[in-house]
Image (cartoon, rainbow, N blue to C red; front, top):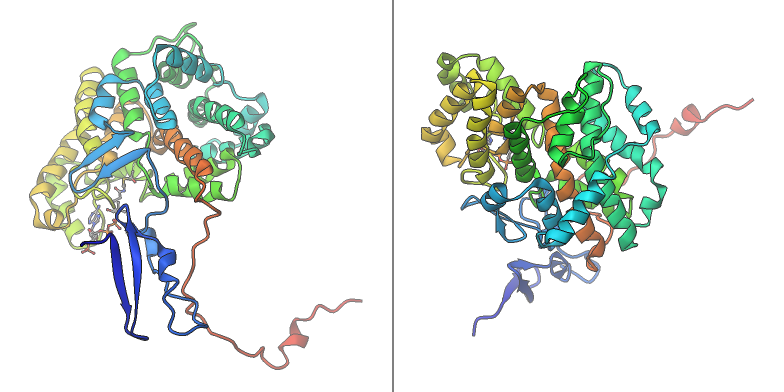
Length: 435
Ligand code: ACO
């Protein structure tokens, strides 16, 4: 009878071992039992970039990269984008269920009442140079919040964790908007509790002298959908960073500063900014074939294409493409969309991209929408970070409560010099002379 186990024969010793297969994986520690001799450390796995390593068990987000499926807590991303608000989805990610009417009322009230920043934090943002990258401002200010809420380090107290989660989700929009206003030299706009999460974000970004900000419903809806699509993506680089830092029992503000730093990289959340630079560089439709040629020659990458997990169309890119049409009806046509569509059309027919299963990812169209809304490219990753806070916190909260988790500490395969003698005479040369 078939058994859920692997039989491994060590040909060095001719010994056979059995490793149980649980949920499609074997525990790496099973391999440690395989030793060439009693003094041997045991076999490890070598997996640079975690290509085939499950770092945790998680019940938050499911991705089938081959089929292009993304689900939060079992719900298809398409359904959530169509029927929910970002705050409902954040609740779902964090607590496992969509909120009922009473829960939603309390959740929205709690978030709304935590959007203010401590005035000292505001002054901290003031200290950045006028041209500071807003992701740098965001990551640094998240770290600074750790000094405002020192009790956040009590990570094993569920009520305390809940309080920091509410604060962080609420304040992300304020931090993002303040970093935007700082860059433009405009006075900060304080939150308006009459507005929804997304409308209030727009208010903090764009209100000038008018006494009450009135948000465009199309732009507010588009931003809300973009927030839903970006809210979580299981063990991506920044969520893994959040878990790794959090595993040292660091408070969630410092852990999130690290997650934001990971997101800022051009191979992760920084890709949407790069997509816009790429479209600017291409400039016009006639230059698209020559650009594709350079990509195929390995000179450059087609930014916004390819994904570690999706080997099919990223479902988020499909939804974003539809949102782009709605936004352009309000903001007017953007030539960059034509270039992007042409890049996609050529790439999806070309063997280079087809054979490598390279499809547009979430970043391919999001930057074009953000630009049409009036954002400079360096704000794009900040817009990604606002809703990803929900995912980072859900992953962190799950990790803290997981009895199997400990401080994250991988192994290495040492390839340096084993042992050598210190060069004769060197001790005296480097000794500090006192007196
Ligand atoms: N343009 C051209 N070629 C590409 C691209 C691309 N965007 N992405 C991958 N390839 C090629 C690689 O050169 C490689 O070719 P080879 O087999 O001939 O060497 C092959 O496709 C496989 O690519 P890998 O780099 O092994 O794939 P990996 O899973 O490591 O990388 C990544 C995924 C980082 C997303 C990559 O596709 C990339 O750099 N894309 C552009 C940046 C981007 O859009 N990032 C956003 C990702 S979504 C997100 O983080 C929110």
